[in-house]
Length: 135
Image (cartoon, rainbow, N blue to C red; front, side, top):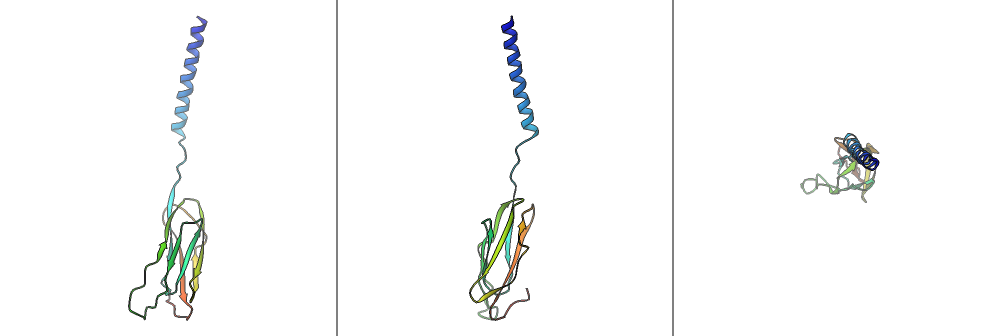
Protein backbone atom coordinates (compact mmCIF):
# COMPACT_ATOMS: atom_id res chain seq x y z
CA UNK A 1 0.00 0.00 0.00
CA UNK A 2 2.81 2.38 0.63
CA UNK A 3 3.77 2.29 -3.04
CA UNK A 4 0.29 3.20 -4.15
CA UNK A 5 0.05 6.07 -1.70
CA UNK A 6 3.47 7.38 -2.65
CA UNK A 7 2.62 7.14 -6.35
CA UNK A 8 -0.70 8.84 -5.74
CA UNK A 9 0.98 11.61 -3.76
CA UNK A 10 3.55 12.10 -6.52
CA UNK A 11 0.84 12.31 -9.17
CA UNK A 12 -1.14 14.76 -7.03
CA UNK A 13 2.01 16.86 -6.50
CA UNK A 14 2.74 16.91 -10.22
CA UNK A 15 -0.83 17.93 -11.09
CA UNK A 16 -0.74 20.65 -8.41
CA UNK A 17 2.58 22.00 -9.72
CA UNK A 18 1.32 22.11 -13.31
CA UNK A 19 -1.92 23.80 -12.28
CA UNK A 20 0.02 26.38 -10.23
CA UNK A 21 2.38 27.12 -13.14
CA UNK A 22 -0.58 27.56 -15.50
CA UNK A 23 -2.32 29.91 -13.05
CA UNK A 24 0.82 32.04 -12.63
CA UNK A 25 1.30 32.25 -16.41
CA UNK A 26 -2.27 33.42 -16.91
CA UNK A 27 -2.01 36.05 -14.17
CA UNK A 28 1.41 37.46 -15.16
CA UNK A 29 1.82 37.26 -18.95
CA UNK A 30 5.09 38.29 -20.55
CA UNK A 31 5.42 42.03 -21.22
CA UNK A 32 4.61 42.91 -24.83
CA UNK A 33 6.88 45.40 -26.56
CA UNK A 34 4.91 48.42 -27.76
CA UNK A 35 6.10 50.59 -30.61
CA UNK A 36 5.01 54.03 -31.78
CA UNK A 37 5.65 56.17 -34.84
CA UNK A 38 8.18 59.01 -34.74
CA UNK A 39 8.32 61.55 -37.58
CA UNK A 40 10.86 64.12 -38.69
CA UNK A 41 9.08 67.12 -40.13
CA UNK A 42 11.23 69.37 -42.32
CA UNK A 43 9.70 72.84 -42.56
CA UNK A 44 9.46 74.72 -45.83
CA UNK A 45 12.38 77.06 -45.09
CA UNK A 46 13.34 76.61 -48.75
CA UNK A 47 16.80 75.24 -47.91
CA UNK A 48 17.94 71.64 -48.15
CA UNK A 49 19.30 69.15 -45.66
CA UNK A 50 19.02 65.78 -43.96
CA UNK A 51 17.71 64.73 -40.56
CA UNK A 52 18.99 61.43 -39.11
CA UNK A 53 18.18 59.61 -35.89
CA UNK A 54 20.16 57.66 -33.33
CA UNK A 55 19.16 54.86 -32.93
CA UNK A 56 18.91 54.50 -36.70
CA UNK A 57 15.51 54.60 -38.36
CA UNK A 58 15.04 58.13 -39.69
CA UNK A 59 17.08 59.44 -42.61
CA UNK A 60 14.95 62.19 -44.14
CA UNK A 61 16.17 64.58 -46.84
CA UNK A 62 14.51 67.78 -48.06
CA UNK A 63 15.83 69.33 -51.28
CA UNK A 64 16.31 73.09 -51.49
CA UNK A 65 13.57 74.91 -53.35
CA UNK A 66 13.15 78.34 -54.89
CA UNK A 67 9.48 79.35 -54.61
CA UNK A 68 10.06 82.19 -57.12
CA UNK A 69 11.85 79.98 -59.66
CA UNK A 70 10.02 77.62 -61.98
CA UNK A 71 6.67 77.80 -60.23
CA UNK A 72 6.85 74.10 -59.42
CA UNK A 73 5.67 73.10 -55.94
CA UNK A 74 8.22 72.23 -53.28
CA UNK A 75 9.41 68.64 -53.71
CA UNK A 76 8.34 66.15 -51.08
CA UNK A 77 11.02 64.94 -48.67
CA UNK A 78 12.79 61.72 -49.62
CA UNK A 79 14.10 58.84 -47.56
CA UNK A 80 12.60 57.62 -44.31
CA UNK A 81 10.88 60.47 -42.47
CA UNK A 82 8.75 58.27 -40.17
CA UNK A 83 9.88 55.14 -38.33
CA UNK A 84 8.71 52.88 -35.50
CA UNK A 85 10.57 52.87 -32.21
CA UNK A 86 9.87 51.03 -28.97
CA UNK A 87 7.95 53.18 -26.47
CA UNK A 88 10.41 54.58 -23.92
CA UNK A 89 13.32 54.77 -26.37
CA UNK A 90 15.20 58.07 -26.38
CA UNK A 91 15.92 59.15 -29.96
CA UNK A 92 18.49 61.86 -30.73
CA UNK A 93 18.49 63.76 -34.02
CA UNK A 94 21.21 65.31 -36.15
CA UNK A 95 20.35 67.90 -38.81
CA UNK A 96 22.90 68.40 -41.58
CA UNK A 97 22.32 71.17 -44.15
CA UNK A 98 23.16 70.61 -47.81
CA UNK A 99 25.86 72.73 -49.45
CA UNK A 100 24.35 76.17 -50.04
CA UNK A 101 21.94 75.87 -47.08
CA UNK A 102 22.14 76.35 -43.32
CA UNK A 103 20.24 75.03 -40.33
CA UNK A 104 17.86 77.79 -39.26
CA UNK A 105 16.13 75.98 -36.38
CA UNK A 106 15.83 72.55 -34.80
CA UNK A 107 15.73 69.72 -34.42
CA UNK A 108 13.05 70.56 -31.86
CA UNK A 109 12.47 68.73 -29.60
CA UNK A 110 15.79 66.93 -29.39
CA UNK A 111 16.04 64.32 -27.99
CA UNK A 112 12.58 62.72 -28.10
CA UNK A 113 11.51 60.00 -25.67
CA UNK A 114 9.04 57.93 -27.66
CA UNK A 115 5.58 57.59 -26.09
CA UNK A 116 2.27 56.23 -27.27
CA UNK A 117 0.57 58.59 -29.68
CA UNK A 118 2.11 61.23 -31.92
CA UNK A 119 5.90 61.79 -31.75
CA UNK A 120 7.86 64.23 -33.90
CA UNK A 121 10.82 66.52 -34.30
CA UNK A 122 10.89 69.66 -36.44
CA UNK A 123 13.73 71.17 -38.52
CA UNK A 124 14.06 74.22 -40.80
CA UNK A 125 16.82 74.56 -43.40
CA UNK A 126 17.30 77.89 -45.20
CA UNK A 127 19.28 78.81 -48.33
CA UNK A 128 22.67 80.40 -47.59
CA UNK A 129 21.70 83.49 -49.65
CA UNK A 130 19.33 84.54 -46.85
CA UNK A 131 16.03 83.90 -48.65
CA UNK A 132 14.02 81.94 -46.09
CA UNK A 133 10.34 81.48 -45.37
CA UNK A 134 8.92 82.74 -42.09
CA UNK A 135 8.33 79.10 -41.12
